[in-house]
Length: 236
Image (cartoon, rainbow, N blue to C red; front, side, top):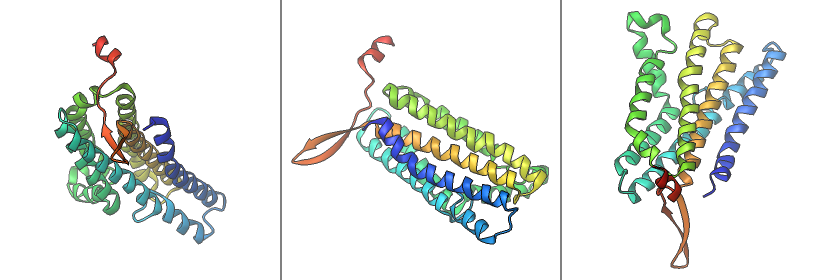
């Protein structure tokens, strides 16, 4: 599958959610939050709000990532365990987007007195450790892929981590200073979610690029191609 085409199609719902959220927030700011209906619509679309259209799109992207990775794990021998890990992560994060597991972790860790000053973004601490562990576990597998898929996954991971750890850290400080209902906080959450969803879309598009369509018994089937190009092997 074409990497660029897959990414464009996956990014369309992301762009729709983010642009709609940004437009509604701009309307709220311009009207000084005078219209309750705007706030209600914003909460129904904003991916940073539980049970919104945005979280549904995000959960769908993660679920698709988990399913595609699972399919690859079933058909790829050399790095089957790594792909199984990716599949498990995709399904877990889909669940996390649905029931906000890491938000509940924030609440649990916030009960620990030394962390109470950072109560609204303590997820960043275990999240950073988790990101480093996952990168270490999967790096060999990712580097073995054809260059388009390899670069797409690396780019997607970098964009996702920048949003989920970098921007979330900033939004956490804003939350402490201005509160969770401030316009600045809402704007940062939109940026954070936009980066996270774009990162997942890039990664999923890169994984779909590994699937080759072929004809089998008068039907369309897909096979996994994780072989690097001849030029890439020679360069090594």
